[in-house]
Figure 1 (spheres, helix red, strand yellow):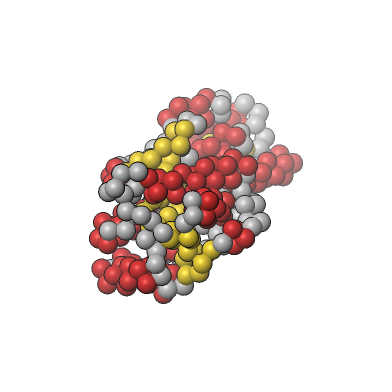
Figure 2 (cartoon, protein in one colour):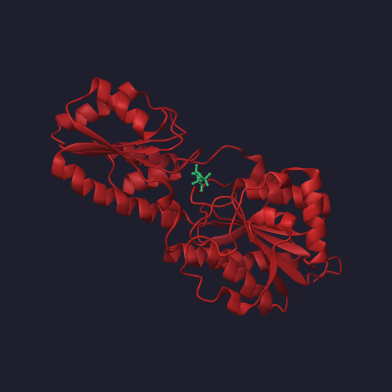
Length: 331
Ligand code: F6P
C-alpha cells in the first residue's frame, strides 16, 4: 500500500433512490468484507436523509444475518432534497465526521451516484458506488442489481396474463416499469413472447402498432400481448390501449399495469451473486485507495469506472441487437 493512501477505520454504507432486490445482499457483502479487513461499519438509514438526520448505527456480522434472500433494503431508502443544497451536504459531512465515518459505500441509481460524486469532491471523503436499480440504466456496468429479479417477476406476470388472454381472445396492454429505460420492457417482451414492445428510447406511432396487430390477427393470432414501458412517449398502457381501440376494435382489449410489485420480492440467484461480488469489490477498492468510482460488471468481470466518466454519458444504452431480434420474433 502506498503511504499516500489514507487509512480507513470505519466505512458507512447506505442505500438511496428506488429500492431494488439484491440491495440487502450488497449491504451484507460490504459489512462482512469490511469486518474481515478489521474495519468498522456504520449503517446509515434512509440514504442521504439519514446522514443529515444522523440516523446511523454500528453494524456487526449478525446485523446482516438472514437478509441475503430478502427484497427491499434493511437500511431503508429515500430521495432527499436537502442533500441537494450546500448546507445539507455540510450538515451530513459534520454528522459523518462525528460518527467516525471516513469512507462511504453508496448503493443506488443515477441520483445516488450524482450525490456521491459531488459530496466526495466537496468534502474529501472517499466513496465507492454500487449500481442498484431495477431499471438497468447506469453507465459503467452491463447489469445493475435488481434487474434480473425484476425481469423474472415481469415474465411470470406476462405468462399468467397470456393464459387468460388466450382463453378470451383478448389483446392485453401490459405496462412495465422504466420511466426512462426500456430495458425491462425489451428483455421481458422477448422472454415473454410479446407481439409488440413500446420503449421510451424509440418512437412508435399508434398507426404503426395497429398495422402490426392487424397483421398478426391476419396470421390467425387470436390473442396478443403488447408490452409498454411506463416512459413510452405515447403516454402509458391505458392511453395506448384507448387509442388503438378507437381504430382497431376487432378484439376485446384489456390493460394491466404491473407497478411497484416489480421492485419487490426475493432476489434471484444472479442478483445475489452480483450484489455480493460488487459489495466485496467496493470495500476492497476503498481500502486500496480508490475513490469516486462505480463498481460494474462487463461480461463476467467486475470492473470500476470513475463516477465522473459514468455520469458524463447521459444517454441510456439499449441493446440494438435485442431491438432487432424482438421485431423478427413477432412475425
Ligand atoms: O426503480 C426505478 C423505477 O422503477 C422507475 O422505473 C420508476 O419510474 C420509478 O422507479 C418510480 O419510483 P417511485 O415510485 O419510487 O418514485
